[in-house]
Image 1: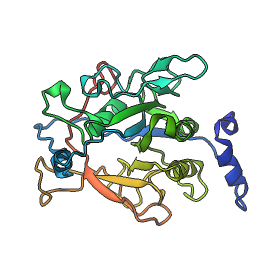
Image 2 (image 1 turned 90 degrees about the vertical axis):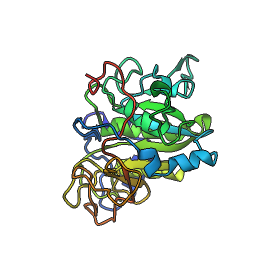
Image 3 (image 1 turned 45 degrees about the vertical axis):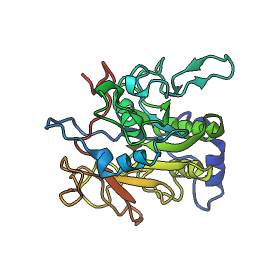
Length: 289
Protein backbone atom coordinates (compact mmCIF):
# COMPACT_ATOMS: atom_id res chain seq x y z
CA UNK A 1 0.00 0.00 0.00
CA UNK A 2 1.44 3.35 -1.01
CA UNK A 3 2.86 5.21 1.96
CA UNK A 4 2.55 2.31 4.37
CA UNK A 5 6.28 1.74 4.83
CA UNK A 6 6.71 5.37 5.80
CA UNK A 7 4.12 5.13 8.56
CA UNK A 8 5.24 1.88 10.17
CA UNK A 9 7.53 2.39 13.18
CA UNK A 10 11.06 1.73 12.01
CA UNK A 11 11.60 -0.90 14.67
CA UNK A 12 8.67 -2.90 13.27
CA UNK A 13 10.11 -3.01 9.77
CA UNK A 14 13.55 -3.77 11.17
CA UNK A 15 12.37 -6.66 13.31
CA UNK A 16 10.36 -8.18 10.47
CA UNK A 17 13.24 -7.81 8.06
CA UNK A 18 15.39 -9.98 10.30
CA UNK A 19 12.90 -12.87 10.22
CA UNK A 20 13.75 -15.47 7.56
CA UNK A 21 11.31 -15.62 4.67
CA UNK A 22 9.29 -12.59 5.80
CA UNK A 23 8.86 -9.51 3.65
CA UNK A 24 9.37 -6.20 5.43
CA UNK A 25 6.09 -4.65 4.28
CA UNK A 26 2.66 -5.96 5.24
CA UNK A 27 -0.39 -4.73 3.29
CA UNK A 28 -2.41 -2.17 5.22
CA UNK A 29 -5.92 -3.08 6.34
CA UNK A 30 -9.00 -1.75 8.07
CA UNK A 31 -9.57 -1.83 11.81
CA UNK A 32 -13.01 -1.37 13.34
CA UNK A 33 -14.03 -0.64 16.90
CA UNK A 34 -15.85 -3.55 18.54
CA UNK A 35 -19.41 -2.21 18.75
CA UNK A 36 -22.56 -4.29 18.53
CA UNK A 37 -25.81 -2.92 17.14
CA UNK A 38 -27.75 -1.10 19.88
CA UNK A 39 -30.87 -2.73 21.25
CA UNK A 40 -33.53 -1.99 23.80
CA UNK A 41 -33.93 -3.57 27.20
CA UNK A 42 -34.79 -2.81 30.79
CA UNK A 43 -31.82 -1.04 32.34
CA UNK A 44 -30.26 -3.34 34.94
CA UNK A 45 -26.58 -2.57 34.51
CA UNK A 46 -24.68 -4.06 37.46
CA UNK A 47 -21.25 -4.76 35.96
CA UNK A 48 -19.23 -3.00 38.72
CA UNK A 49 -20.74 -5.42 41.23
CA UNK A 50 -20.23 -8.42 38.95
CA UNK A 51 -16.48 -7.74 38.71
CA UNK A 52 -16.42 -6.73 42.41
CA UNK A 53 -15.24 -3.21 41.64
CA UNK A 54 -17.47 -1.94 44.44
CA UNK A 55 -15.48 -4.04 46.91
CA UNK A 56 -12.24 -2.59 45.53
CA UNK A 57 -13.61 0.94 46.01
CA UNK A 58 -14.37 0.21 49.65
CA UNK A 59 -10.75 -0.87 50.00
CA UNK A 60 -9.54 2.41 48.56
CA UNK A 61 -8.71 1.08 45.08
CA UNK A 62 -10.38 3.47 42.65
CA UNK A 63 -7.83 4.00 39.90
CA UNK A 64 -6.48 7.20 41.39
CA UNK A 65 -2.99 7.94 40.07
CA UNK A 66 -3.36 5.64 37.04
CA UNK A 67 -3.72 6.85 33.46
CA UNK A 68 -5.56 4.61 31.00
CA UNK A 69 -4.92 5.32 27.31
CA UNK A 70 -8.11 4.67 25.34
CA UNK A 71 -7.11 4.19 21.71
CA UNK A 72 -10.41 4.66 19.94
CA UNK A 73 -12.68 7.21 18.24
CA UNK A 74 -11.98 9.99 20.73
CA UNK A 75 -13.68 10.96 23.99
CA UNK A 76 -16.27 13.73 24.25
CA UNK A 77 -14.37 16.41 26.21
CA UNK A 78 -17.40 17.88 28.01
CA UNK A 79 -19.01 14.87 29.74
CA UNK A 80 -19.37 15.49 33.50
CA UNK A 81 -18.28 11.95 34.46
CA UNK A 82 -14.71 12.59 33.29
CA UNK A 83 -14.38 16.24 34.28
CA UNK A 84 -10.86 17.02 35.48
CA UNK A 85 -9.60 13.54 34.59
CA UNK A 86 -9.29 13.78 30.81
CA UNK A 87 -5.55 14.19 30.29
CA UNK A 88 -4.52 17.29 28.37
CA UNK A 89 -1.91 16.46 25.73
CA UNK A 90 0.80 19.02 25.01
CA UNK A 91 1.97 19.63 21.47
CA UNK A 92 5.72 20.03 21.79
CA UNK A 93 6.38 22.43 18.87
CA UNK A 94 3.62 24.90 19.81
CA UNK A 95 3.10 24.27 23.51
CA UNK A 96 -0.67 24.16 23.01
CA UNK A 97 -2.75 21.54 24.79
CA UNK A 98 -5.66 19.42 23.56
CA UNK A 99 -7.95 16.84 25.21
CA UNK A 100 -6.54 14.03 23.05
CA UNK A 101 -3.71 12.90 20.84
CA UNK A 102 -5.40 13.17 17.46
CA UNK A 103 -4.22 10.83 14.69
CA UNK A 104 -7.63 10.38 13.06
CA UNK A 105 -7.39 12.90 10.24
CA UNK A 106 -10.31 14.85 11.72
CA UNK A 107 -9.64 18.38 12.90
CA UNK A 108 -10.43 18.04 16.60
CA UNK A 109 -10.77 15.63 19.51
CA UNK A 110 -14.57 15.30 19.41
CA UNK A 111 -15.93 11.75 19.37
CA UNK A 112 -18.09 11.74 16.25
CA UNK A 113 -18.75 7.99 16.37
CA UNK A 114 -19.45 7.62 20.10
CA UNK A 115 -17.55 4.43 20.88
CA UNK A 116 -14.51 5.91 22.59
CA UNK A 117 -16.65 7.94 25.00
CA UNK A 118 -18.66 4.82 25.87
CA UNK A 119 -15.48 2.84 26.57
CA UNK A 120 -13.99 5.67 28.64
CA UNK A 121 -17.14 5.67 30.78
CA UNK A 122 -16.91 1.92 31.38
CA UNK A 123 -13.34 2.42 32.51
CA UNK A 124 -13.55 5.60 34.56
CA UNK A 125 -16.98 7.26 34.65
CA UNK A 126 -17.65 8.57 38.18
CA UNK A 127 -21.43 8.84 38.02
CA UNK A 128 -21.57 12.65 37.95
CA UNK A 129 -24.03 12.62 35.06
CA UNK A 130 -26.42 10.16 36.71
CA UNK A 131 -26.46 11.25 40.33
CA UNK A 132 -23.97 8.49 41.16
CA UNK A 133 -26.11 5.70 39.72
CA UNK A 134 -23.86 4.58 36.86
CA UNK A 135 -20.12 4.35 37.45
CA UNK A 136 -17.19 2.80 35.64
CA UNK A 137 -14.88 0.32 37.32
CA UNK A 138 -12.10 2.83 38.13
CA UNK A 139 -13.98 6.08 38.85
CA UNK A 140 -10.87 8.06 39.83
CA UNK A 141 -8.56 6.96 37.01
CA UNK A 142 -7.41 9.45 34.40
CA UNK A 143 -8.25 8.91 30.73
CA UNK A 144 -5.88 9.78 27.91
CA UNK A 145 -7.81 9.81 24.66
CA UNK A 146 -5.80 8.67 21.64
CA UNK A 147 -8.11 9.37 18.72
CA UNK A 148 -7.24 7.13 15.79
CA UNK A 149 -10.66 6.65 14.14
CA UNK A 150 -13.34 9.05 12.99
CA UNK A 151 -17.08 9.23 12.43
CA UNK A 152 -17.43 5.78 10.82
CA UNK A 153 -15.59 3.96 13.61
CA UNK A 154 -12.78 2.63 11.43
CA UNK A 155 -9.11 3.34 10.78
CA UNK A 156 -6.19 1.88 8.87
CA UNK A 157 -3.80 -0.50 10.60
CA UNK A 158 -1.00 1.98 9.90
CA UNK A 159 -2.90 4.60 11.92
CA UNK A 160 -3.23 2.21 14.85
CA UNK A 161 0.48 1.43 14.65
CA UNK A 162 1.31 5.13 14.83
CA UNK A 163 -1.05 5.55 17.78
CA UNK A 164 0.48 2.67 19.72
CA UNK A 165 3.96 3.99 19.01
CA UNK A 166 2.92 7.40 20.39
CA UNK A 167 1.56 5.78 23.57
CA UNK A 168 4.82 3.89 24.08
CA UNK A 169 6.90 7.01 23.44
CA UNK A 170 4.96 9.16 25.91
CA UNK A 171 4.18 6.55 28.55
CA UNK A 172 6.35 8.17 31.21
CA UNK A 173 5.24 11.74 30.52
CA UNK A 174 1.56 10.89 31.06
CA UNK A 175 1.94 7.98 33.51
CA UNK A 176 0.18 5.57 31.15
CA UNK A 177 -0.21 2.25 32.95
CA UNK A 178 -2.96 0.66 30.84
CA UNK A 179 -3.63 0.68 27.09
CA UNK A 180 -7.19 -0.24 26.05
CA UNK A 181 -7.91 -1.43 22.52
CA UNK A 182 -11.59 -2.19 21.98
CA UNK A 183 -10.97 -2.74 18.27
CA UNK A 184 -9.82 -5.38 15.86
CA UNK A 185 -8.96 -6.33 12.30
CA UNK A 186 -9.83 -9.59 10.56
CA UNK A 187 -6.30 -10.21 9.27
CA UNK A 188 -5.28 -13.87 9.54
CA UNK A 189 -1.53 -13.26 9.39
CA UNK A 190 0.45 -15.20 11.97
CA UNK A 191 0.81 -13.22 15.21
CA UNK A 192 4.53 -13.95 15.23
CA UNK A 193 5.18 -11.80 12.14
CA UNK A 194 2.31 -9.31 12.04
CA UNK A 195 3.22 -5.61 12.65
CA UNK A 196 0.10 -4.96 14.75
CA UNK A 197 1.00 -7.82 17.07
CA UNK A 198 4.56 -6.53 17.28
CA UNK A 199 3.27 -3.09 18.26
CA UNK A 200 1.14 -4.34 21.17
CA UNK A 201 4.04 -6.47 22.35
CA UNK A 202 6.26 -3.38 22.43
CA UNK A 203 3.63 -1.64 24.57
CA UNK A 204 3.67 -4.63 26.93
CA UNK A 205 7.47 -4.59 27.00
CA UNK A 206 7.35 -0.90 27.94
CA UNK A 207 5.52 -1.85 31.13
CA UNK A 208 1.88 -1.32 30.22
CA UNK A 209 -1.03 -3.67 30.71
CA UNK A 210 -2.54 -4.01 27.22
CA UNK A 211 -6.23 -4.92 27.22
CA UNK A 212 -7.88 -5.94 23.93
CA UNK A 213 -11.45 -6.91 23.07
CA UNK A 214 -11.78 -10.51 21.85
CA UNK A 215 -14.14 -9.47 18.99
CA UNK A 216 -17.81 -9.21 18.21
CA UNK A 217 -17.59 -11.93 15.56
CA UNK A 218 -18.80 -14.95 17.59
CA UNK A 219 -20.14 -17.47 18.29
CA UNK A 220 -18.02 -19.68 16.03
CA UNK A 221 -14.60 -20.93 17.11
CA UNK A 222 -11.50 -19.07 15.87
CA UNK A 223 -13.26 -15.69 15.83
CA UNK A 224 -10.68 -13.81 17.91
CA UNK A 225 -9.58 -10.77 15.93
CA UNK A 226 -6.14 -9.20 15.78
CA UNK A 227 -4.43 -7.95 17.98
CA UNK A 228 -6.44 -9.90 20.59
CA UNK A 229 -4.77 -13.04 19.21
CA UNK A 230 -1.44 -12.07 20.77
CA UNK A 231 -0.24 -14.08 23.80
CA UNK A 232 1.18 -10.95 25.48
CA UNK A 233 -2.08 -9.00 25.77
CA UNK A 234 -5.07 -9.49 28.06
CA UNK A 235 -7.86 -10.61 25.72
CA UNK A 236 -11.35 -9.98 27.10
CA UNK A 237 -14.51 -11.72 25.97
CA UNK A 238 -18.03 -10.69 26.93
CA UNK A 239 -20.63 -12.14 29.23
CA UNK A 240 -24.27 -11.26 29.72
CA UNK A 241 -24.72 -10.89 33.48
CA UNK A 242 -28.53 -10.95 33.05
CA UNK A 243 -28.83 -7.92 35.31
CA UNK A 244 -27.71 -9.75 38.45
CA UNK A 245 -24.49 -9.54 40.43
CA UNK A 246 -24.34 -13.33 40.88
CA UNK A 247 -22.52 -15.48 38.34
CA UNK A 248 -24.83 -18.48 38.28
CA UNK A 249 -27.15 -17.11 35.60
CA UNK A 250 -24.47 -15.54 33.40
CA UNK A 251 -24.41 -16.43 29.70
CA UNK A 252 -21.94 -16.06 26.84
CA UNK A 253 -23.64 -13.87 24.24
CA UNK A 254 -23.38 -15.03 20.64
CA UNK A 255 -21.47 -11.95 19.52
CA UNK A 256 -18.44 -12.51 21.77
CA UNK A 257 -15.46 -13.95 19.88
CA UNK A 258 -14.43 -17.51 20.73
CA UNK A 259 -11.04 -19.16 20.70
CA UNK A 260 -8.72 -20.64 19.94
CA UNK A 261 -7.12 -18.09 17.65
CA UNK A 262 -6.47 -18.83 13.98
CA UNK A 263 -3.00 -20.07 14.98
CA UNK A 264 -3.99 -22.14 17.99
CA UNK A 265 -3.48 -19.73 20.91
CA UNK A 266 -5.94 -20.27 23.77
CA UNK A 267 -8.04 -17.11 24.02
CA UNK A 268 -9.81 -15.16 25.48
CA UNK A 269 -7.95 -14.85 28.78
CA UNK A 270 -10.90 -13.53 30.79
CA UNK A 271 -14.52 -12.53 30.32
CA UNK A 272 -16.44 -9.62 31.80
CA UNK A 273 -19.92 -8.12 31.38
CA UNK A 274 -20.29 -6.77 27.87
CA UNK A 275 -24.02 -6.91 27.20
CA UNK A 276 -26.63 -4.43 28.51
CA UNK A 277 -23.99 -2.23 30.12
CA UNK A 278 -24.63 1.47 30.71
CA UNK A 279 -22.03 4.09 29.91
CA UNK A 280 -21.49 7.60 28.57
CA UNK A 281 -22.92 9.06 25.37
CA UNK A 282 -21.14 11.45 23.05
CA UNK A 283 -23.87 13.96 22.17
CA UNK A 284 -24.53 14.16 18.43
CA UNK A 285 -22.29 11.20 17.56
CA UNK A 286 -23.16 8.40 15.12
CA UNK A 287 -24.13 6.01 17.92
CA UNK A 288 -26.02 8.73 19.81
CA UNK A 289 -28.18 9.61 16.83
